[in-house]
Length: 201
Image 1 (cartoon, rainbow, N blue to C red):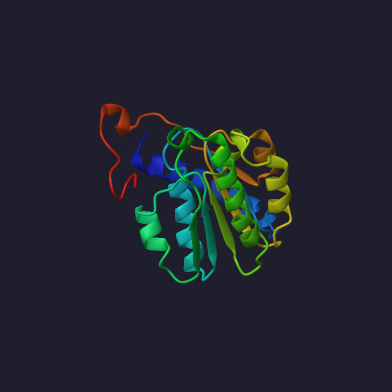
Image 2 (image 1 turned 45 degrees about the vertical axis):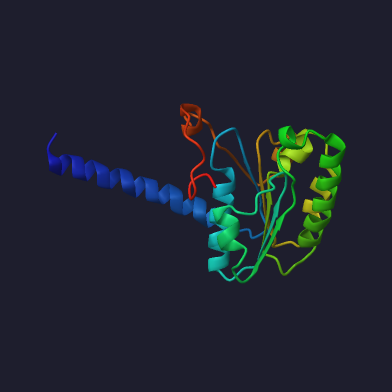
């Protein structure tokens, strides 16, 4: 087949593709605050959420971040975003469960954190709320999934919410508008490489 034939076939294929995409875009005419869930055992869930955060800030939106489980306040994202205008940032955890080894303490910490998250979910001035690592609190029963979903459902109509963490419960997945599963195919940590600033921290 000549290059001219290949180019003609490619052009015809792109015309058909454009028609399909344009029709789908035209059909998507609703506006609403979205609930997005980023789950799975791969790296990049929180990083994806913070990418959306940068995008929201670029539109002048106010963003609230509640980091459950995590206790570090020296990460690159916290160091950068927490000092930006239009950002509320809360590190609400005391470390992963294998570090605290105290279920009752973890429950108290999660409950106190959720009270702050509830305030953000009631604030129509916040356009995007990121509930980082929230799924762990549901998986281990630290917080009531039914209550979490009710609070998210009762948020201001145009407020977007992003929930990150492994093992998202089915009820959360069912309630979400968009769900992405990040798969773990290969990770440098298993080759003995420690977490790298700017990539993992």
